[in-house]
Amino acid sequence: MDLFSPDHPLTRALTERGYTDLTSVQSAVLDPRAAERDLLVSAQTGSGKTVAYGLAMAPTLLGDAAALAPAAEPLALVVAPTRELALQVHTELSWLYRHAGGQVVSCVGGMDPRAEQRLLGRGCHIVVGTPGRLRDHLERGALRTGRLRVVVLDEADEMLDMGFREDLEFILEATPQQRRTLLFSATLPHEIIAMAKRYQRDAWRIALSAGPQGHADIDHRVVRVAPNEVEHAVVNLLRYFESPTAMVFCGTRESVRHLQASLLERGFGVVALSGELSQNERNHALQALRDGRARVCVATDVAARGIDLPSLDLVIHADLPRTAETLQHRSGRTGRAGRKGVSVLLVPLSRKRRAEQLLQTAGLKVEWSGAPAAEDIRKLDQQRLLQHPILTDETSEEELGMAQALLAERSAEEIAAALVRLYRSHLPAAEEVFDPGPGLPARDRSAPREPHQPREPRGERDNNRATVWFRLNIGRLKNADPRWLIPLICRQGKITKQEIGAIRILERETKFEIDATVADRFLAATREIVRPEGRIEPLGEVPPGEHDQHKPRTTPPGRKAPWKGKPKGRA
Image 1 (cartoon, helix red, strand yellow):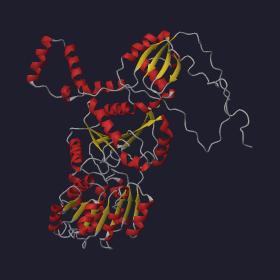
Image 2 (cartoon, helix red, strand yellow; image 1 turned 90 degrees about the vertical axis):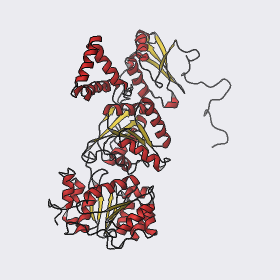
Image 3 (cartoon, rainbow, N blue to C red; image 1 turned 120 degrees about the vertical axis):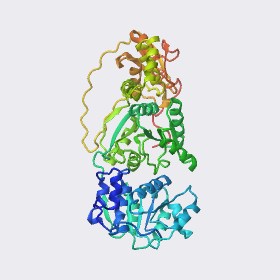
Image 4 (cartoon, rainbow, N blue to C red; image 1 turned 180 degrees about the vertical axis):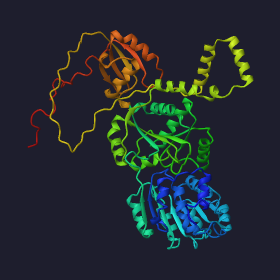
């Protein structure tokens, strides 16, 4: 039966699910040149690969029939890297093959293997599982492969990264040689190519690039941050986009725990995923995201593998990914199934060059900007309040009666102000985050150096002007640097950099001068900002004993200066 016929069981299933157009990878596997051949497919995470290989298997499993024969030994085997992904694949293939009478069984870690064995014994058409559990069933004889026609490796690069090479090779060796092998991977490193050469025959290669701007449904952005402002930038991004579900990636378990605690303290509904969680704890965390009890997931790369959250519209890279492939895998968690998504890379100035290398390798050209400002978030809050169902839904008679009673006691302005306070009371407060600026542009190393230009003469500095000293509780231990300290001081104190004098960066704090003419205004502005980091306090006059702190060091009397004269014993 023609797969494009409206009477085909898979076409009927797609129509019922609301499919009007196929994605690029789904169309590519239906190319006549790909029919009945092994496939080596490179496509972005979230591009519709599950339905793609479901469609690719159809001619092999169904032939010209309108339905599958009664279930017996499995006809197709799908191997996925994680329990979550395997269960999602089970769900997808179940509805896709429903009208064809397809029976799908999952075999994954964390589930009762005896129950799985009973289901396999009753017969099925498709088995979906994780490498370890599938190998276990093969070794015990519960999974029979004599009638297998198709084997699918989903996210093959992830499975190799997770150390499943031996299990995958065992599974492939245990299946009939005349099978079709469909290998799907977001990237095609050398290890994947080597596996394809060994276990595939005359494979049709499908390489679907996301183009120069990356995945078409993902808006990639880069946000400049000061090293101590990453956490605040995460807060403002979560508040700015208000995604139903957001994922924040961190580099270590400790970073995950710290950021989760910080977001919980601020009032976000947040769960954490890291390697030390039990399967039960992991399930509870994912269920909280799916039912809306939490809308933020802070995770490490390994813990987030195989997770598919349909409402995930925002990915934040709190720590830079190690490779461009990791960047693609992280970002590919959003922008799925036709939904638009946003992927934001947070980049301190010290990591700018590394970030540029990652973006270039990934083929992404993106705009750099600062984090959303607190004022911009407050403006968005106002717009969201005006569109909130509490104001747009139809009002009942009882509610109108309560409104009239309130108006009899309070003015309309007082009631409106109370509504605003009530609305804001459920929202985490936005942070005052500054933009450290673009920094120095990266020089094209292949281009010749430009000749040095003479500096313009600097204006005379008035060393006799009156100044007031202040202290900032950020020092060298927190990577204090004038490149982002000066914008921070200007932003918090609402002054210009011309009104800042000397700056002294110490181990745990920074001391700086402000023109006396603006000192009162500066102090008043900084006292409006309440935050543990970036707190500014007045010092008054120059701290005693620090007048000569930054003068050039001189050699103590009676001691020879280093490297003066010819060292003894050396030619």
